Image (cartoon, rainbow, N blue to C red):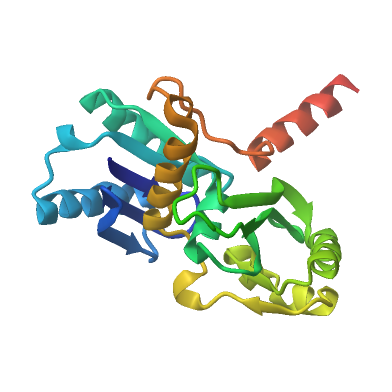
Length: 252
């Protein structure tokens, strides 16, 4: 299976091609430029470097959210446009599961988090089951807490409880871990580590591998048409909240 993967849910813009389980290419840019400026040029460089026939792609994997509203919309529009142009389906990968896949196979609890402002993060908590059969047909990613907006202190309280029950060490990843590092250090009493910088943020290669596993596990149910795809925001944007507040004030 050949998968083109895209992730523009956070500050990095990243794209990759996974070909029959081999990561053929991955390109990431984390710089002071917009995703609309970087995403398509980097994908064109990947296409050129691999001499990639776009019609040979079986599916387009997209980090489906949560994340930056603008970033998610750019990634979604790009994936939908490619899917429609080549007539291939999309595989939507939850953003935080993609980050957790940076640490595939770890025996630690992975807390993936993205900054959601005001001492809140979008967070998901995961662990990996051991593949005793060598090639499990089940999902080796165990979701301990599905991605949700949550206060950092409450997240730390949940992680303390989970670590106490499981005896596992915690691995903190994502830009939320960096932004709220001091708050985490103050409230997390369980044993933990912060992810190294080169694995701390979104990687399209990890999105591609998670997409491949979702297809292996769910088959056709993992696929959606380009027209069907919608990003997962988890909460309304600030502009929408302000608009709603103004409307309530006007009505009162």
